[in-house]
Image (cartoon, rainbow, N blue to C red; front, top):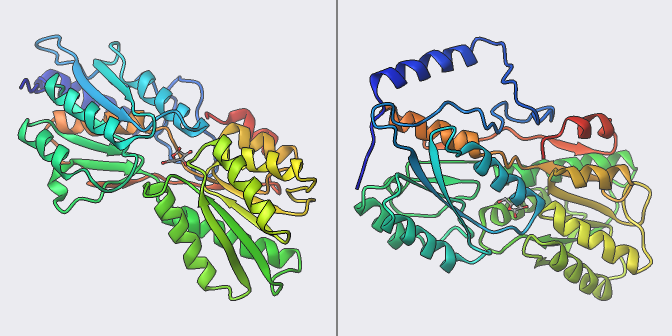
Length: 356
Ligand code: AHR
């Protein structure tokens, strides 16, 4: 197992560069910065500090076990890793798309171990079932970094760090937004019927958003959750589930979709059923992620609000790796700041600056 240590020269160069970043000029020179009001400052860049071992000229090999390509969010996340972990930046990236299957991710991690990569990064499909393969990585001496979704493990030394969104908070922000919106519409005390199209069952993004919204349901005795079903975070399944909800219930007031792509599918289903949605429609529609297409949907008057989940984790993971290479400690749990967007905002202007 090869382990590389950055030379004193590189560490000094990195320190100087990080100090410069913190000096307030804030100009990375890269395009595509996300201008979301409260979004995390650390943006995806392909101009990250070169992480190559200055003595040997070797690249740092990173194996990324990606969930799949189920959503616009996921595409942006993949792009974030591919543009950050480049040879130019001192990395060799081995990318694996697990097609939303945990067994494929476990196979990918084992293959990374065999290839003696320097770091393994995982965006786990679901939270449970990882102990054995993480122990294998630990035995091989390969640090594991979790990104986006979390793993539930009894021994947290099995991974170095996790960086991602606070999914429970996203769900709660959604519930608080809805309460305020209904109040503004004079519907605060009305009986409100809801349905939820959940994400992949057992994925942190599903577990957290469902829990956050459940916390808010407890605060509103007039809110009734009629049914929840998984749409697997995809547009096609989101549409299919919404079609079945519309057949079962004729009095849906609010649809919660646990990602934007499910929302796009559900909006198609609502329209096909002869109903309307959005601020002037029959049904209030909210979703999570805040990808560009969600802004277009809000501008078109179909979607009421979207709760942000930032996918640009490539540079955040690179920063963790650089710190570990330099022998520094890293925060185990690293939440990214996130915001939300609704039709009361200047969406055109925000969209112009939006990175994903
Ligand atoms: O884990 C993040 C979630 O995964 C995003 O909300 C969704 O779009 C993606 O598939």
